[in-house]
Image 1 (cartoon, helix red, strand yellow):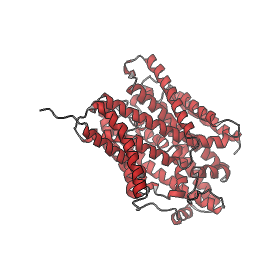
Image 2: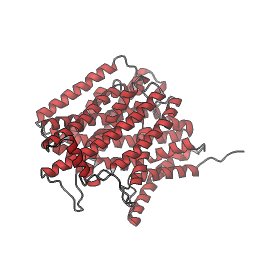
Image 3: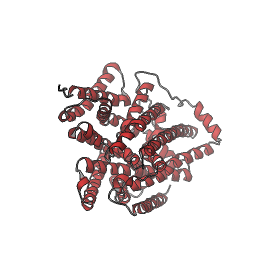
Image 4: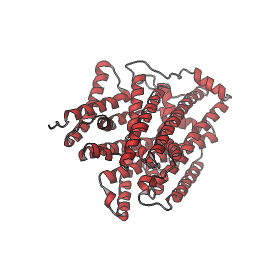
Length: 486
Protein backbone atom coordinates (compact mmCIF):
# COMPACT_ATOMS: atom_id res chain seq x y z
CA UNK A 1 0.00 0.00 0.00
CA UNK A 2 1.27 3.45 -0.87
CA UNK A 3 1.99 5.93 1.96
CA UNK A 4 -0.47 8.41 0.39
CA UNK A 5 -3.30 5.87 0.59
CA UNK A 6 -2.43 5.02 4.19
CA UNK A 7 -2.34 8.73 5.08
CA UNK A 8 -5.72 9.29 3.43
CA UNK A 9 -7.29 6.44 5.42
CA UNK A 10 -5.89 7.83 8.70
CA UNK A 11 -7.16 11.36 7.98
CA UNK A 12 -10.66 10.19 7.02
CA UNK A 13 -10.88 7.93 10.05
CA UNK A 14 -9.83 10.70 12.42
CA UNK A 15 -12.30 13.13 10.81
CA UNK A 16 -15.08 10.63 11.54
CA UNK A 17 -13.97 10.39 15.19
CA UNK A 18 -13.97 14.19 15.53
CA UNK A 19 -17.48 14.38 14.05
CA UNK A 20 -18.73 11.88 16.65
CA UNK A 21 -16.93 13.81 19.39
CA UNK A 22 -18.58 17.06 18.30
CA UNK A 23 -22.04 15.49 18.20
CA UNK A 24 -21.77 13.82 21.60
CA UNK A 25 -20.20 16.80 23.38
CA UNK A 26 -23.17 19.07 22.69
CA UNK A 27 -25.07 19.69 25.90
CA UNK A 28 -22.47 17.89 27.99
CA UNK A 29 -21.81 18.78 31.60
CA UNK A 30 -18.56 18.40 33.51
CA UNK A 31 -19.92 15.15 34.97
CA UNK A 32 -20.41 13.74 31.45
CA UNK A 33 -16.65 13.16 31.17
CA UNK A 34 -16.74 10.70 34.09
CA UNK A 35 -20.22 9.10 34.05
CA UNK A 36 -21.73 9.78 30.60
CA UNK A 37 -24.68 11.24 32.59
CA UNK A 38 -25.62 7.56 33.26
CA UNK A 39 -27.81 7.52 30.14
CA UNK A 40 -25.92 5.22 27.76
CA UNK A 41 -27.99 2.48 26.00
CA UNK A 42 -26.77 -0.87 27.39
CA UNK A 43 -26.59 -2.61 24.00
CA UNK A 44 -24.43 0.20 22.61
CA UNK A 45 -22.08 -0.03 25.59
CA UNK A 46 -21.85 -3.84 25.24
CA UNK A 47 -20.96 -3.72 21.55
CA UNK A 48 -18.54 -0.82 21.96
CA UNK A 49 -16.70 -2.56 24.78
CA UNK A 50 -15.74 -5.33 22.36
CA UNK A 51 -13.32 -2.92 20.67
CA UNK A 52 -11.68 -1.98 23.97
CA UNK A 53 -11.65 -5.61 25.13
CA UNK A 54 -10.08 -6.86 21.91
CA UNK A 55 -7.75 -3.98 21.02
CA UNK A 56 -4.81 -4.38 18.68
CA UNK A 57 -3.54 -7.22 20.83
CA UNK A 58 -6.38 -9.56 19.85
CA UNK A 59 -6.50 -8.19 16.31
CA UNK A 60 -2.83 -8.98 15.64
CA UNK A 61 -1.40 -11.06 18.48
CA UNK A 62 -4.08 -13.76 18.82
CA UNK A 63 -3.93 -14.89 15.16
CA UNK A 64 -0.14 -14.93 15.33
CA UNK A 65 0.13 -16.89 18.59
CA UNK A 66 -1.66 -19.86 16.96
CA UNK A 67 1.65 -20.85 15.36
CA UNK A 68 3.29 -21.60 18.73
CA UNK A 69 0.32 -22.26 21.03
CA UNK A 70 -2.32 -23.71 18.69
CA UNK A 71 -5.86 -22.89 19.94
CA UNK A 72 -4.99 -23.32 23.63
CA UNK A 73 -5.91 -19.68 24.22
CA UNK A 74 -9.57 -20.67 23.91
CA UNK A 75 -9.26 -22.49 27.25
CA UNK A 76 -8.52 -19.05 28.71
CA UNK A 77 -11.55 -17.57 26.92
CA UNK A 78 -13.85 -20.23 28.41
CA UNK A 79 -12.64 -19.16 31.84
CA UNK A 80 -13.41 -15.55 30.89
CA UNK A 81 -17.09 -16.41 30.40
CA UNK A 82 -17.35 -17.75 33.97
CA UNK A 83 -15.56 -14.64 35.27
CA UNK A 84 -18.03 -12.35 33.50
CA UNK A 85 -20.93 -14.25 35.12
CA UNK A 86 -19.41 -13.41 38.53
CA UNK A 87 -19.08 -9.74 37.56
CA UNK A 88 -22.72 -9.69 36.43
CA UNK A 89 -24.18 -11.31 39.53
CA UNK A 90 -21.94 -9.92 42.28
CA UNK A 91 -19.92 -6.82 41.36
CA UNK A 92 -22.36 -4.77 39.28
CA UNK A 93 -25.17 -4.79 41.91
CA UNK A 94 -22.57 -3.75 44.51
CA UNK A 95 -21.27 -0.83 42.45
CA UNK A 96 -24.77 0.46 41.67
CA UNK A 97 -25.82 0.14 45.29
CA UNK A 98 -22.90 2.37 46.35
CA UNK A 99 -23.41 4.79 43.39
CA UNK A 100 -19.68 4.76 42.67
CA UNK A 101 -17.84 6.87 40.08
CA UNK A 102 -14.47 5.31 40.91
CA UNK A 103 -15.10 1.65 41.75
CA UNK A 104 -12.25 1.69 44.28
CA UNK A 105 -14.50 3.69 46.58
CA UNK A 106 -15.73 0.26 47.73
CA UNK A 107 -12.35 -0.44 49.35
CA UNK A 108 -12.66 2.75 51.40
CA UNK A 109 -16.12 1.72 52.61
CA UNK A 110 -14.96 -1.81 53.48
CA UNK A 111 -11.41 -1.37 54.83
CA UNK A 112 -10.31 2.25 55.07
CA UNK A 113 -8.36 5.01 53.39
CA UNK A 114 -5.00 3.22 53.03
CA UNK A 115 -6.57 0.19 51.37
CA UNK A 116 -8.57 2.47 49.09
CA UNK A 117 -5.45 4.31 47.94
CA UNK A 118 -3.51 1.06 47.51
CA UNK A 119 -6.23 -0.50 45.34
CA UNK A 120 -6.47 2.59 43.17
CA UNK A 121 -2.69 2.77 42.83
CA UNK A 122 -2.54 -0.83 41.60
CA UNK A 123 -5.19 -0.01 39.01
CA UNK A 124 -3.22 3.01 37.81
CA UNK A 125 -0.12 0.82 37.48
CA UNK A 126 -1.98 -2.03 35.76
CA UNK A 127 -3.89 0.15 33.34
CA UNK A 128 -0.87 2.27 32.40
CA UNK A 129 1.14 -0.82 31.44
CA UNK A 130 -1.82 -2.53 29.73
CA UNK A 131 -2.76 0.52 27.67
CA UNK A 132 0.86 1.21 26.72
CA UNK A 133 1.53 -2.37 25.57
CA UNK A 134 -1.69 -2.46 23.53
CA UNK A 135 -0.85 0.83 21.87
CA UNK A 136 2.74 -0.26 21.28
CA UNK A 137 1.66 -3.04 18.94
CA UNK A 138 -0.64 -0.80 16.90
CA UNK A 139 1.93 2.00 16.75
CA UNK A 140 4.59 -0.40 15.41
CA UNK A 141 2.29 -1.45 12.58
CA UNK A 142 1.39 2.13 11.67
CA UNK A 143 5.10 2.93 11.73
CA UNK A 144 5.76 0.08 9.30
CA UNK A 145 2.80 0.95 7.06
CA UNK A 146 3.26 4.71 6.78
CA UNK A 147 5.55 6.64 9.12
CA UNK A 148 8.78 4.85 8.14
CA UNK A 149 8.17 5.78 4.51
CA UNK A 150 7.83 9.43 5.55
CA UNK A 151 11.05 9.32 7.61
CA UNK A 152 9.15 10.00 10.85
CA UNK A 153 10.76 8.48 14.00
CA UNK A 154 8.79 5.99 16.11
CA UNK A 155 8.56 8.26 19.15
CA UNK A 156 6.91 10.94 16.99
CA UNK A 157 4.38 8.37 15.75
CA UNK A 158 3.39 7.59 19.35
CA UNK A 159 3.08 11.29 20.20
CA UNK A 160 0.85 11.86 17.16
CA UNK A 161 -1.49 9.01 18.16
CA UNK A 162 -1.73 10.23 21.78
CA UNK A 163 -2.38 13.78 20.61
CA UNK A 164 -5.18 12.65 18.27
CA UNK A 165 -6.79 10.65 21.08
CA UNK A 166 -6.63 13.68 23.38
CA UNK A 167 -8.35 15.87 20.78
CA UNK A 168 -11.52 13.79 20.61
CA UNK A 169 -11.76 12.68 24.26
CA UNK A 170 -10.91 15.79 26.29
CA UNK A 171 -14.36 17.40 26.03
CA UNK A 172 -16.82 14.66 26.94
CA UNK A 173 -14.64 11.72 27.95
CA UNK A 174 -16.62 8.54 28.51
CA UNK A 175 -19.77 9.99 26.91
CA UNK A 176 -17.92 10.26 23.59
CA UNK A 177 -16.04 6.99 24.00
CA UNK A 178 -19.24 4.92 24.28
CA UNK A 179 -20.02 5.95 20.68
CA UNK A 180 -16.52 6.02 19.21
CA UNK A 181 -15.80 2.54 20.60
CA UNK A 182 -18.94 1.24 18.88
CA UNK A 183 -17.69 2.51 15.53
CA UNK A 184 -14.22 1.14 16.20
CA UNK A 185 -15.62 -2.30 17.07
CA UNK A 186 -17.31 -2.39 13.66
CA UNK A 187 -14.00 -1.73 11.88
CA UNK A 188 -12.15 -4.20 14.11
CA UNK A 189 -14.47 -7.14 13.41
CA UNK A 190 -14.90 -6.18 9.74
CA UNK A 191 -11.12 -6.34 9.30
CA UNK A 192 -11.10 -10.00 10.38
CA UNK A 193 -14.16 -10.98 8.32
CA UNK A 194 -12.87 -9.32 5.14
CA UNK A 195 -9.44 -10.94 5.56
CA UNK A 196 -11.07 -14.37 5.91
CA UNK A 197 -13.04 -13.69 2.72
CA UNK A 198 -9.90 -12.62 0.81
CA UNK A 199 -7.90 -15.66 1.95
CA UNK A 200 -10.64 -18.16 1.03
CA UNK A 201 -11.03 -16.48 -2.38
CA UNK A 202 -7.25 -16.52 -2.97
CA UNK A 203 -7.08 -20.23 -2.14
CA UNK A 204 -10.18 -21.02 -4.27
CA UNK A 205 -12.07 -22.26 -1.23
CA UNK A 206 -15.72 -21.99 -0.35
CA UNK A 207 -16.61 -21.03 3.22
CA UNK A 208 -17.34 -24.70 3.95
CA UNK A 209 -14.03 -25.66 2.37
CA UNK A 210 -12.16 -23.12 4.51
CA UNK A 211 -13.82 -24.55 7.64
CA UNK A 212 -12.72 -28.06 6.64
CA UNK A 213 -9.15 -26.87 6.06
CA UNK A 214 -9.06 -25.26 9.51
CA UNK A 215 -10.64 -28.29 11.22
CA UNK A 216 -8.09 -30.69 9.67
CA UNK A 217 -5.02 -28.51 10.33
CA UNK A 218 -2.44 -29.66 12.94
CA UNK A 219 -2.84 -26.33 14.77
CA UNK A 220 -6.45 -27.20 15.68
CA UNK A 221 -5.71 -28.31 19.25
CA UNK A 222 -7.90 -26.68 21.88
CA UNK A 223 -7.15 -28.57 25.10
CA UNK A 224 -3.79 -29.19 26.78
CA UNK A 225 -3.60 -31.63 29.71
CA UNK A 226 0.17 -31.44 30.39
CA UNK A 227 0.35 -30.32 34.04
CA UNK A 228 3.84 -28.80 33.64
CA UNK A 229 2.88 -26.63 30.66
CA UNK A 230 1.75 -23.03 31.02
CA UNK A 231 -0.94 -23.92 28.45
CA UNK A 232 -2.52 -26.61 30.69
CA UNK A 233 -6.34 -26.51 30.63
CA UNK A 234 -6.83 -25.95 34.37
CA UNK A 235 -4.18 -23.22 34.53
CA UNK A 236 -5.65 -21.44 31.50
CA UNK A 237 -9.29 -21.81 32.60
CA UNK A 238 -8.74 -20.64 36.19
CA UNK A 239 -6.48 -17.81 35.03
CA UNK A 240 -9.08 -16.81 32.41
CA UNK A 241 -11.77 -16.64 35.08
CA UNK A 242 -9.68 -14.63 37.57
CA UNK A 243 -8.16 -12.29 34.98
CA UNK A 244 -11.64 -11.55 33.56
CA UNK A 245 -12.84 -10.59 37.04
CA UNK A 246 -9.72 -8.48 37.57
CA UNK A 247 -9.28 -6.87 34.15
CA UNK A 248 -12.96 -6.03 33.76
CA UNK A 249 -14.79 -6.24 37.07
CA UNK A 250 -12.00 -4.58 39.08
CA UNK A 251 -10.86 -2.32 36.26
CA UNK A 252 -12.04 1.28 36.20
CA UNK A 253 -11.57 1.40 32.44
CA UNK A 254 -14.09 -1.33 31.62
CA UNK A 255 -16.48 -0.73 34.52
CA UNK A 256 -16.67 3.00 33.87
CA UNK A 257 -18.44 2.26 30.59
CA UNK A 258 -20.75 -0.26 32.25
CA UNK A 259 -21.68 2.21 34.99
CA UNK A 260 -22.89 4.71 32.38
CA UNK A 261 -25.95 2.44 31.86
CA UNK A 262 -29.25 3.67 33.28
CA UNK A 263 -29.76 0.89 35.82
CA UNK A 264 -28.10 -2.13 37.39
CA UNK A 265 -30.24 -4.45 35.24
CA UNK A 266 -29.15 -2.67 32.06
CA UNK A 267 -25.51 -2.94 33.17
CA UNK A 268 -25.94 -6.68 33.80
CA UNK A 269 -27.46 -7.21 30.36
CA UNK A 270 -24.54 -5.26 28.93
CA UNK A 271 -21.94 -7.47 30.63
CA UNK A 272 -23.57 -10.78 29.66
CA UNK A 273 -23.99 -9.68 26.05
CA UNK A 274 -20.42 -8.40 25.94
CA UNK A 275 -19.01 -11.68 27.30
CA UNK A 276 -20.79 -13.83 24.71
CA UNK A 277 -19.91 -11.59 21.75
CA UNK A 278 -16.30 -11.36 22.96
CA UNK A 279 -15.96 -15.17 23.20
CA UNK A 280 -17.32 -15.64 19.68
CA UNK A 281 -15.14 -12.86 18.28
CA UNK A 282 -11.96 -14.23 19.87
CA UNK A 283 -12.72 -17.66 18.40
CA UNK A 284 -13.09 -15.93 15.02
CA UNK A 285 -9.60 -14.46 15.40
CA UNK A 286 -8.13 -17.84 16.37
CA UNK A 287 -9.69 -19.36 13.23
CA UNK A 288 -8.28 -16.47 11.22
CA UNK A 289 -4.85 -17.30 12.64
CA UNK A 290 -5.03 -20.87 11.32
CA UNK A 291 -6.10 -19.54 7.90
CA UNK A 292 -3.20 -17.08 7.83
CA UNK A 293 -0.72 -19.92 8.43
CA UNK A 294 -2.44 -22.06 5.79
CA UNK A 295 -2.09 -19.19 3.31
CA UNK A 296 1.59 -18.65 4.20
CA UNK A 297 2.29 -22.39 3.73
CA UNK A 298 0.48 -22.49 0.38
CA UNK A 299 2.45 -19.50 -0.94
CA UNK A 300 5.81 -20.73 0.35
CA UNK A 301 6.26 -17.71 2.64
CA UNK A 302 9.10 -18.46 5.06
CA UNK A 303 8.48 -17.53 8.67
CA UNK A 304 11.50 -16.98 10.98
CA UNK A 305 12.08 -19.56 13.73
CA UNK A 306 14.36 -19.62 16.76
CA UNK A 307 16.88 -22.29 17.74
CA UNK A 308 14.15 -24.15 19.67
CA UNK A 309 11.91 -24.34 16.59
CA UNK A 310 9.46 -21.77 17.92
CA UNK A 311 8.22 -19.11 15.50
CA UNK A 312 9.66 -15.64 16.09
CA UNK A 313 7.82 -12.32 15.89
CA UNK A 314 4.41 -13.95 15.43
CA UNK A 315 2.81 -10.51 15.84
CA UNK A 316 4.12 -9.60 12.36
CA UNK A 317 2.28 -12.44 10.56
CA UNK A 318 -1.09 -10.72 10.07
CA UNK A 319 0.24 -7.25 9.15
CA UNK A 320 2.83 -8.69 6.77
CA UNK A 321 0.30 -10.81 4.85
CA UNK A 322 -2.45 -8.17 4.87
CA UNK A 323 -0.27 -5.28 3.72
CA UNK A 324 2.08 -7.13 1.35
CA UNK A 325 0.37 -10.27 0.01
CA UNK A 326 -3.44 -10.23 0.24
CA UNK A 327 -4.26 -7.24 -1.95
CA UNK A 328 -5.77 -3.80 -1.55
CA UNK A 329 -9.11 -4.77 0.05
CA UNK A 330 -7.45 -6.81 2.80
CA UNK A 331 -4.82 -4.10 3.27
CA UNK A 332 -7.35 -1.29 3.76
CA UNK A 333 -9.58 -3.37 6.05
CA UNK A 334 -6.55 -4.38 8.13
CA UNK A 335 -5.37 -0.79 8.33
CA UNK A 336 -8.81 0.42 9.46
CA UNK A 337 -8.92 -2.38 12.01
CA UNK A 338 -5.53 -1.59 13.50
CA UNK A 339 -6.26 2.17 13.58
CA UNK A 340 -9.52 1.39 15.38
CA UNK A 341 -7.61 -0.86 17.75
CA UNK A 342 -4.95 1.76 18.48
CA UNK A 343 -7.50 4.44 19.33
CA UNK A 344 -9.95 2.22 21.24
CA UNK A 345 -7.17 0.70 23.35
CA UNK A 346 -5.94 4.04 24.64
CA UNK A 347 -8.90 6.48 24.66
CA UNK A 348 -10.95 4.72 27.33
CA UNK A 349 -7.79 3.83 29.27
CA UNK A 350 -6.76 7.48 29.49
CA UNK A 351 -10.27 8.48 30.56
CA UNK A 352 -10.37 5.79 33.24
CA UNK A 353 -6.89 6.68 34.53
CA UNK A 354 -7.91 10.33 34.69
CA UNK A 355 -11.14 9.48 36.52
CA UNK A 356 -9.45 7.22 39.06
CA UNK A 357 -6.63 9.63 39.85
CA UNK A 358 -8.78 12.75 40.10
CA UNK A 359 -11.41 11.09 42.33
CA UNK A 360 -9.18 8.73 44.35
CA UNK A 361 -6.13 10.91 44.92
CA UNK A 362 -7.12 14.53 44.20
CA UNK A 363 -10.72 14.32 45.47
CA UNK A 364 -12.18 16.86 43.03
CA UNK A 365 -15.83 16.15 43.94
CA UNK A 366 -16.13 19.36 45.98
CA UNK A 367 -14.38 21.69 43.52
CA UNK A 368 -15.95 24.11 41.04
CA UNK A 369 -16.60 23.07 37.44
CA UNK A 370 -13.77 25.27 36.17
CA UNK A 371 -11.24 23.82 38.61
CA UNK A 372 -12.37 20.27 37.88
CA UNK A 373 -11.86 20.80 34.16
CA UNK A 374 -8.40 22.32 34.65
CA UNK A 375 -7.26 19.49 36.93
CA UNK A 376 -8.79 16.87 34.66
CA UNK A 377 -6.93 18.13 31.59
CA UNK A 378 -3.60 18.23 33.45
CA UNK A 379 -4.06 14.67 34.71
CA UNK A 380 -5.03 13.50 31.21
CA UNK A 381 -1.84 15.04 29.81
CA UNK A 382 0.21 13.51 32.62
CA UNK A 383 -1.00 9.97 31.96
CA UNK A 384 -0.44 10.44 28.23
CA UNK A 385 3.20 11.14 29.11
CA UNK A 386 3.36 8.03 31.35
CA UNK A 387 2.02 5.79 28.57
CA UNK A 388 4.50 7.32 26.12
CA UNK A 389 7.41 6.50 28.44
CA UNK A 390 6.29 2.89 28.96
CA UNK A 391 5.94 2.40 25.19
CA UNK A 392 9.47 3.62 24.60
CA UNK A 393 10.84 1.26 27.29
CA UNK A 394 9.18 -1.78 25.65
CA UNK A 395 9.64 -0.63 22.04
CA UNK A 396 12.31 -3.26 21.29
CA UNK A 397 10.41 -6.22 22.79
CA UNK A 398 9.77 -9.33 20.65
CA UNK A 399 7.20 -12.15 20.80
CA UNK A 400 3.43 -11.97 21.19
CA UNK A 401 2.37 -8.94 23.21
CA UNK A 402 -0.76 -10.63 24.55
CA UNK A 403 1.33 -13.01 26.69
CA UNK A 404 3.29 -10.07 28.12
CA UNK A 405 0.05 -8.26 29.01
CA UNK A 406 -1.49 -11.21 30.87
CA UNK A 407 1.76 -12.02 32.65
CA UNK A 408 2.03 -8.41 33.86
CA UNK A 409 -1.65 -8.52 34.87
CA UNK A 410 -0.94 -11.53 37.10
CA UNK A 411 1.34 -9.35 39.24
CA UNK A 412 -0.48 -6.02 39.16
CA UNK A 413 -4.10 -7.19 39.44
CA UNK A 414 -3.42 -9.99 41.95
CA UNK A 415 -3.50 -7.78 45.09
CA UNK A 416 -6.69 -6.07 43.83
CA UNK A 417 -8.35 -9.45 43.32
CA UNK A 418 -7.33 -10.56 46.80
CA UNK A 419 -8.67 -7.37 48.40
CA UNK A 420 -12.07 -7.61 46.73
CA UNK A 421 -12.52 -11.35 47.36
CA UNK A 422 -11.58 -10.91 51.01
CA UNK A 423 -13.85 -7.88 51.36
CA UNK A 424 -16.90 -9.45 49.73
CA UNK A 425 -16.74 -12.96 51.18
CA UNK A 426 -15.64 -12.28 54.76
CA UNK A 427 -16.72 -9.86 57.46
CA UNK A 428 -13.25 -9.66 58.97
CA UNK A 429 -11.84 -6.23 59.74
CA UNK A 430 -8.13 -5.60 59.17
CA UNK A 431 -5.60 -3.04 60.34
CA UNK A 432 -5.82 -0.65 57.43
CA UNK A 433 -2.37 0.87 57.89
CA UNK A 434 -0.64 -2.45 57.13
CA UNK A 435 -2.56 -3.25 53.94
CA UNK A 436 -0.10 -1.42 51.60
CA UNK A 437 2.75 -3.58 52.97
CA UNK A 438 0.79 -6.79 52.29
CA UNK A 439 -0.09 -5.66 48.76
CA UNK A 440 3.52 -4.77 47.99
CA UNK A 441 4.88 -8.04 49.37
CA UNK A 442 2.39 -10.30 47.53
CA UNK A 443 3.70 -9.74 43.95
CA UNK A 444 7.31 -10.10 45.12
CA UNK A 445 6.56 -13.43 46.83
CA UNK A 446 4.56 -14.56 43.78
CA UNK A 447 7.55 -13.91 41.53
CA UNK A 448 9.84 -15.84 43.88
CA UNK A 449 7.49 -18.83 44.06
CA UNK A 450 7.05 -18.80 40.27
CA UNK A 451 10.81 -18.78 39.66
CA UNK A 452 11.40 -21.55 42.20
CA UNK A 453 8.65 -23.73 40.68
CA UNK A 454 10.15 -23.33 37.21
CA UNK A 455 13.74 -24.02 38.30
CA UNK A 456 13.15 -26.83 40.82
CA UNK A 457 10.19 -28.67 39.30
CA UNK A 458 9.95 -27.37 35.69
CA UNK A 459 6.46 -26.22 36.65
CA UNK A 460 5.34 -23.16 34.69
CA UNK A 461 2.66 -21.18 36.53
CA UNK A 462 1.84 -19.19 33.39
CA UNK A 463 -1.13 -16.84 33.71
CA UNK A 464 -2.27 -18.56 36.94
CA UNK A 465 0.25 -16.48 38.88
CA UNK A 466 -2.69 -14.12 39.50
CA UNK A 467 -4.31 -16.81 41.69
CA UNK A 468 -1.08 -17.26 43.68
CA UNK A 469 -0.79 -13.49 44.07
CA UNK A 470 -4.40 -13.14 45.29
CA UNK A 471 -4.01 -16.07 47.71
CA UNK A 472 -0.88 -14.52 49.26
CA UNK A 473 -2.73 -11.19 49.61
CA UNK A 474 -5.66 -12.89 51.38
CA UNK A 475 -3.28 -14.77 53.68
CA UNK A 476 -1.56 -11.50 54.54
CA UNK A 477 -4.89 -9.83 55.31
CA UNK A 478 -5.73 -12.65 57.73
CA UNK A 479 -2.45 -11.99 59.52
CA UNK A 480 -3.37 -8.33 60.13
CA UNK A 481 -7.00 -8.84 61.12
CA UNK A 482 -8.28 -6.88 64.06
CA UNK A 483 -8.91 -8.76 67.27
CA UNK A 484 -12.54 -8.88 68.34
CA UNK A 485 -13.31 -6.86 71.42
CA UNK A 486 -15.68 -8.34 74.01
